[in-house]
Amino acid sequence: MDVSSLPATPREIRELIRGGAIARNTAGMAPGHVQANLAILPRDLAFDFLLFCQRNPKPCPLIEVVEAGQTEPRETAPGADLRSDTPKYRVYRHGEMTEETADVSEYWRDDLVSFLLGCSFSFESAMERAGVPLRHIEAGTNVSMFVTDIETAPAGAFSGPMVVSMRPIPRDQVVRTVQVTSRFPGVHGAPVHVGDPAAIGIRDVGAPDLGDPVEIRDGEVPVFWACGVTPQAVAMRSKPPLMITHSPGHMFITDLRDEDLAVF
Amino acid sequence: MDVSSLPATPREIRELIRGGAIARNTAGMAPGHVQANLAILPRDLAFDFLLFCQRNPKPCPLIEVVEAGQTEPRETAPGADLRSDTPKYRVYRHGEMTEETADVSEYWRDDLVSFLLGCSFSFESAMERAGVPLRHIEAGTNVSMFVTDIETAPAGAFSGPMVVSMRPIPRDQVVRTVQVTSRFPGVHGAPVHVGDPAAIGIRDVGAPDLGDPVEIRDGEVPVFWACGVTPQAVAMRSKPPLMITHSPGHMFITDLRDEDLAVF
Image (cartoon, rainbow over all chains, first blue to last red; front, side):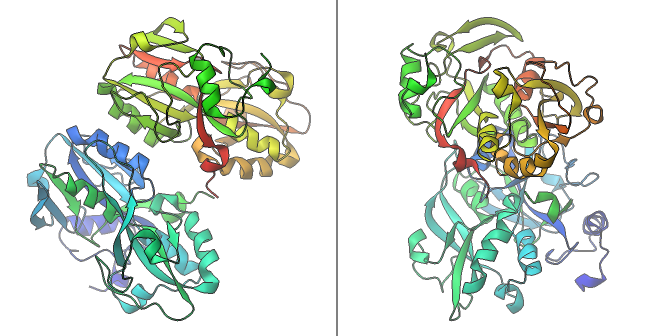
């Protein structure tokens, strides 16, 4: 299915996803709107996870929290159903993935709390509007991601290293890149590091821990952002009895516009 | 005691407070450092209150959350003790104030969770540095505060109207005021409204619900900010069995610098 032939509103796209007409990853859908990472946990872990997000806003920028017993994100996607409106989900038990599915209604319990977290699609749109090239998008590959030696601030059961994404940026656009992404703390915001992979514990910037390698050309600087994989990785380390997430790239599309999250 | 004769570091001031040598309000102490509102609640209300803060970041800007069983804010004031390092506390039972005291050790329980929230002292410092006059400080009175018809986003047991503070700003400094305070979302940040008290449900801008009246002169515009009284007012409405707060103006002084909270 060609993304450009899809309807433009988040609500219409969510309805197609819910009905099974869209099953692919959501890159490029509903341009200008905020897509979100999804993490669903039992209530007895929810306070610690919420606190973890509050302490680590760069990797875990909260967009909305939906309380136990509810499935509709009323603030950012009224009318949506979190059990069916994401194209693909992963179900984990005690830290092991047990299923990948298009609908998690059968797993739903009244004690599940849902967390929607900002994703880098929004700040990448801002970079594109500012004329900053994004090589992994040009190349059609996944962004390079690395486990760093930056420790997150722990909260209860949750702790672990920060995962970052890396984008090679032309030297003369680094300052503009910092400015443009700083406007969007709700979707990871400003970089966590510019320039030296070793300074944050990355041994080989050509060999990412997740995603695909990307070439760094002469005159380019590797720039690193906190990555939304962090909260999932951290949650998984605690081996929760049940955790449901979106599948990579298969995001939950909200009604929010990217600009709604801009701080200035 | 003259504030200018006090030691300059937050740690030294907290030690004087803990020992009983300082009992007054903390206005002007440890200039350049973040002072915080304090709210302490039992654990079974903590998730809802944390969620309320996440949903209402303008009135409830979280600086740090200290988990049940702990009394040291390790991130923002290592070595401090939340039971004794605020000059005056209020103890509420089921929504009624039962005591005002300089030390709450005797009330402490292992299930109490402590919330430190940003206060307007920090953004007022930024306004002063930018040359914006603050009449209530010049006059030595308390800022004017109003209960509005802006509803906060509810969370569990917590809901209610937003309380705002008002400062009269010269018309030609309104834009600068918005810019300067926008840098500090961690201490209430940008105004919630500029210009028309009736638009946010305020009938008589000369008759504040809390604090003191302040004159609005020709060529000045009333500018309104979300106020840290909101979370206390909202929490009190739910009549928690136990809640401990700072006394008005008697803040908890952190080691953070105001500029640590600036977003750009």
